Image (tube, rainbow, N blue to C red; front, side, top):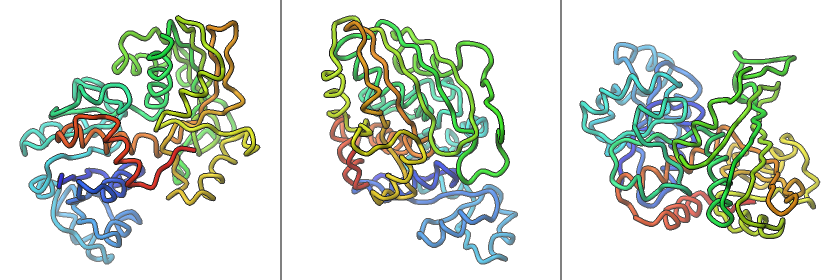
Length: 340
């Protein structure tokens, strides 16, 4: 069994912990929090050993009925690999600690590519992650872009990509972010960071991205345009999407035209936390103009799509299987995940 520690039990960390616990070849040896919280209570209830950043705060946890197993250093002693799910910018500061304890490490897209020197997407470069000691799983937006771009590129070739990210303002549980009544250009300058981030995984892709933030909490929406190198039809693009294990079609028959309806759909399907691990591509939006211009809308659940990527990264780094499709299949099956 691969022994996995999750440093940071928040939006991503708690989802990664549950996904790891569901795998037949992995176990959660611990999760961490910096202060008492509802998530710390949940960790106890789920049976995950809870470790804390500063052992001097142990009394604060135990005073409110939260059991503490030790500090983060103790957690790392039990781990083969640690998933760093701490806030962006914090994870890089933990690198020296992971190296000290000789534990493999995975960072999230909130960190720079240089923290690991290798950026990961299961569908694109799984084999290159085999046996690595350090990996960065790219952000939710980059994950969604990489999936569709690589899938289309492998069949028709992609000359260039132009994509606009309409980003959520905050996660559903967030109370300190906005905007409340504004559309914020984020950044005002073009390109946004998403295109260069895609190139850390797919360096040959010519891509320019734009981004803005809107007052919503569930999902980002991508407006994607690709220039293809070979003639394609809408039906051929739809077939690529339907066959991909991490992309799903939002069917015309569902009547879904918004992220709010998409969330309700995920809830009705029985998905934990209404999570959408796949890129959700709106069937009606898929259009091929003049045989070589592809357009589509895709929704990206910012809390969920990188979770399955973290699981595959663990398996690759620990040489659990050399085959990306086998790992993806195992991860999906263990979560009871069948794309839309």
